[in-house]
Image (tube, rainbow, N blue to C red):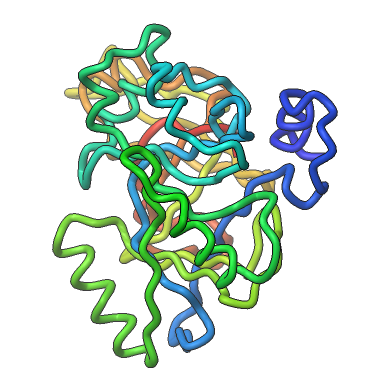
Length: 272
């Protein structure tokens, strides 16, 4: 049983949810030349994943999201999966707002809950996505889904989204049942790939980085270790992610040994 599943089982408190809904569905990278015909496609939001069980809102790690009462009051009695979102290229501001121990109304008034799944819903994904449209409100905003016919059309839509400041596209198979964990039912398409790894070491900097972080030593879920030395702000080099934390990194491709090529730090991540 994964850490995410154990955590979610704990906070569900023994509720009789179907086991398949206890762990969020996670995307794999879309293969080159994918036929988009069978998929419902949406923009990939640069937000913070959050799960609503009808009573409480929690991060993917299982930690409680301390949101204002008026925000939670606008969420329905049924379970939702989605992302707290502020705007394109506003992840740092969003992350700071939703992780405060005391929520600030002015910040939360700008935040929406972009929902893309009903963890207790029935039918195939296309049917569940249609049901989500009926839950739209000021806070709950069902993610817009659309279809494309050809790989060329998919590439062009990706170009448009990235040019406008978006991260990429998500492709959810229209005939997908409820599923959990990393699955081919859900694919992500981005100009560069990203992944998560655990911090297992800090390497001191040299030259202009003397006295601060030079690189992180990371370990992937598969046990592969590599160094990550780019993408950090000066503040992050002075106060790097602690040992045991998880970070998201972006890379272009994998080497024959399976290590990421041209990897760059993106952010501290929730537990995978």
